[in-house]
Length: 287
Image 1: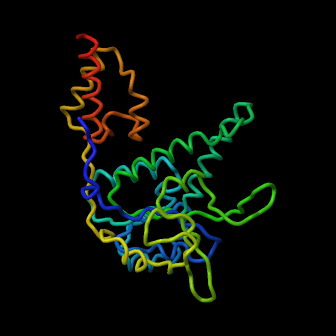
Image 2: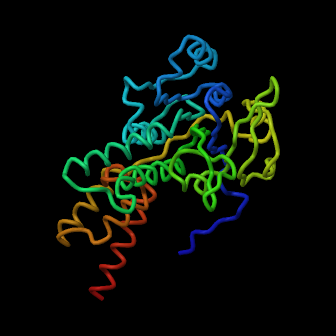
Image 3: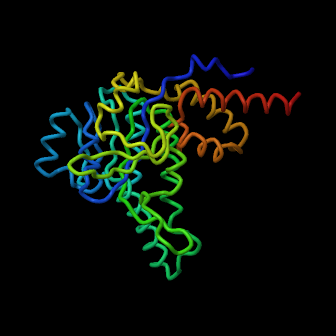
């Protein structure tokens, strides 16, 4: 059965963006969108002026004391936001730099404590794996997404040629919009570094505030619809097949594709495809 559909039926896109810039320039200030779910990995948003703005936009706040600096905690929060009923419209992670680099450092220290030296970026593997899973869940998350990163030099042939974001380098390809926040006199602007949206052209400058995006995204304030997880019947079916076959040869591949680590976390539609495919394979083998 072919699964393609008319482009007119495709799910309307929500803005998904990565924002970076130098410290204190106003990256966070422009991310105070209505009904935000604000994950503060550094604790900066707990300062009085930030708290006031968070309250004005009716935000929910997750800080370092709640585990916000841990990539695995961030992932679990995103999974919950994707699968539970709630009134949040925008996910803000400020900053992804802190969470990503902390995860890398923890693995580096673990390797060194065993008497080894990290080789070929070995210390990045757990952080990259969590980032890949995070991106998979962004695809299911019916919310606007703003990931805020620190700025670092961009090098080419030993020379600094500009600035870029400090985080997993593949984020540039995974998100639809990459913005560099810059200061022009008394104004804070966003320079378009990369865009998949017709309304935002590369190297253009736009105002860094929610009004800029409200003009171009019809569903920016739409109520989130949760993803349905695997049913008890599906879990019973997959468990029965695994028991019968003595394991699942596709488990690692399917879990990686879905960004999950257990069958219970599998989205309902993905689980249905897994069961259908495996049953087809088994029936073909016994035909």
